[in-house]
Length: 296
Image 1: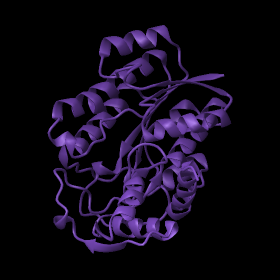
Image 2 (image 1 turned 180 degrees about the vertical axis):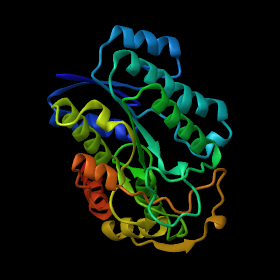
Image 3 (image 1 turned 135 degrees about the vertical axis):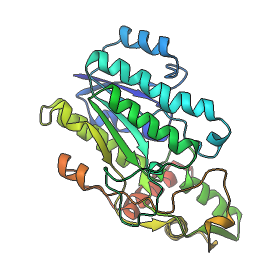
């Protein structure tokens, strides 16, 4: 049985891994959030790895408050760069693979075709820059690192766009949602399932540990805008709220958002034989699960 450390376990992907964990009985999971393991504490992380032997690490811990990062630069750097280095050091000493979750924000340029893993990066803002620095740090420190870049993550857990739209759609008669930012919504449960499926292939010897190394993209299939995403949520839920398309400049934020961040998933699908759901299908599943949680 392989022992898997999941950091940032209270986040969207971390909680989804916990939900799916029983479907992967060949793994024993240890779930840690900041209260159990502050990844920015080098001494604590070092002793933690000395006290425990793992087979794999999945790092879901990150400073993900994109706008807040603009004013909390030091904290964002400690979590997204130093914390990642601490985990990668621990993995290197135990000679084990680490899956590190990253973001589409690292690209942010004028490209208008789906980004491949080797495309030019151009991070804008503290969040994007620290995430890219963390990616580079992880890859340089531990050769057995998979950097998994994803986009527009939502879930039945935590705070996210889907839950915000469900709330605002019931409170407001109309909303203005940006239409000039294009990407792909990604259900965190699909990310979790993909990661555990990949690690299962490694654990069963179907893939070598070093075969997972490098940068991979994972998002749901399809392309949309935030405007169309909101429209789909309201349509599925029969919410009577008018959605008006607006341009990004009409909704200013401290941190710039990428105008186009569609990810090409050919590499991960070919390498691991993954079949990735369309974003509309996964959204429908998530909404049904959210409705099932609401008492009648």
